[in-house]
Length: 113
Image 1 (cartoon, one colour):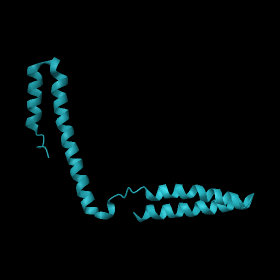
Image 2 (cartoon, one colour; image 1 turned 90 degrees about the vertical axis):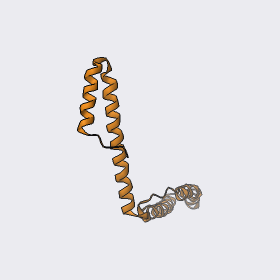
Image 3 (cartoon, one colour; image 1 turned 90 degrees about the horizontal axis):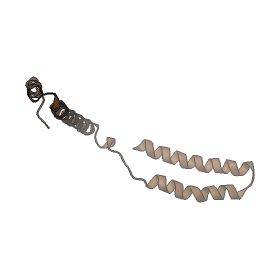
Image 4 (cartoon, one colour; image 1 turned 60 degrees about the horizontal axis):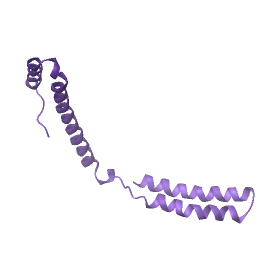
C-alpha cells in the first residue's frame, strides 16, 4: 500500500506549482490527484479484502453457468412437448407448469449461494 499523503506533501505540491508557473498546473495537480486516487484505490481494495475474509467462503460467488444453460437447453423441448400434447388452454397450463418448475429450480439454486 502506498504511503499516506501528508500535509507536507500538499505543501510541496503547492510550492512546486508556484515555482513552475501556471503552464505546469495541469501536470502538477494531475500527479497529486493520481497519488490520491491510488491511495483511495488501495484503501478500498483493503476494505473489500477484509470484508470478504470476514464473510467467509459463503460470500464467494459461484459463477457456474451450467444451471441457466441447462434450463434453456431443456426448456425448449419441454416447451414443444407442453404445447404439442394438447390444444387450447390445456397446453398453456402445461407450459406454465413446466416453466414455473424451471424457474423454481433456478431461484432455489440462486438462493442456495
